[in-house]
Length: 131
Image 1: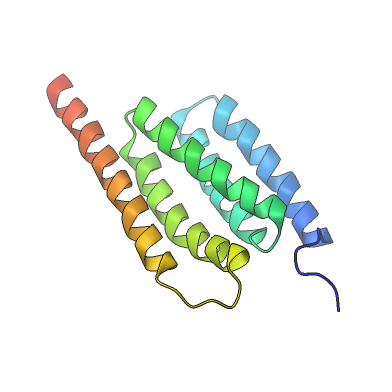
Image 2 (image 1 turned 180 degrees about the vertical axis):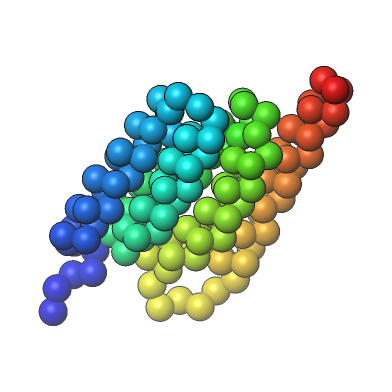
């Protein structure tokens, strides 16, 4: 039986897609292109969630979405970060703690969701003051 943590061909393809999307998310010419590339980052990280490479990509993706969402005052990026959190955190916890049914998943999701909601409230408050 093969180790489920080893890098496979689908992981390699997803990693290539993730790297291309990362370049577009950071260097994209418009906010619309950057948002689409960010959605691709989440999808590619989810496709790799069964490997260590996928775990690193998931962590970097969520960090990028949170930082860019707050820095650019983008509620759309923060919402994408929330969706990404719901997609990427449960497989990550299952990867690091296999076979242990615990409260780690719901507690982690609540903590991260609280941070994302707080960020969205701050961004919305900044937008309202600028208007």
